Length: 245
Image 1 (cartoon, rainbow, N blue to C red):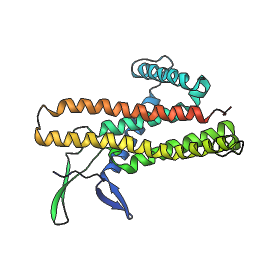
Image 2: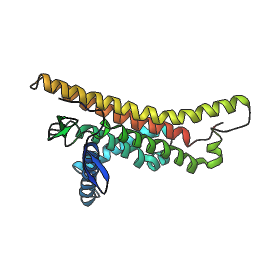
Image 3: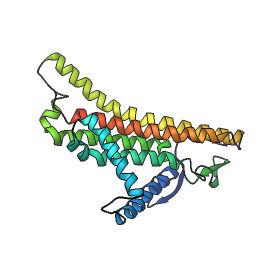
Image 4: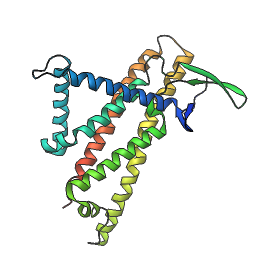
């Protein structure tokens, strides 16, 4: 048994390495494309079944966003970003604990010894995935903040000459925006990778029964991490789209 902190390369396409975490991410994207197409084709004026449940969940999420943004108009405007982040993160986390993920693969000789390379791994167990998601979240917040209040007003939150204290606080705010990317990426990566290691070790030592409670724990952790990522993005978005007074 060998635990790798980095994603394993499976093959290359035009010199671009395709890793097992990237393959899982493509699988998640494909899953959403298929599901969204099926749902759109079955939309009804009077909701029933899955559509009814989906609309109830959407209404609940919009209500939660209203409590943060203070406006239904804003909630509906930014709902696609927040919902996409939540669904993408939770699906990536949960796909990683499906049967076959981490256990189906091939053996490869590296550095004089043979190692097992899994065909699929959770996308969030790759720091490249979480860092890219953090960059998208933070830059989206800044971009939407500029659209909401204007470039100069938004930049004035970080760079101002009104007073020495305001200038110092602005610099700290700018540094905190960079720190958000690091915090976002390492929080999600650390929790998912640690869960992956825990499942591998328990399955190796006691392959029957004992890993089951840890699987449910990982389901819960995957949900919490997706919720935290989406809620923090929502809170930062709420701050970025209002003027400082």
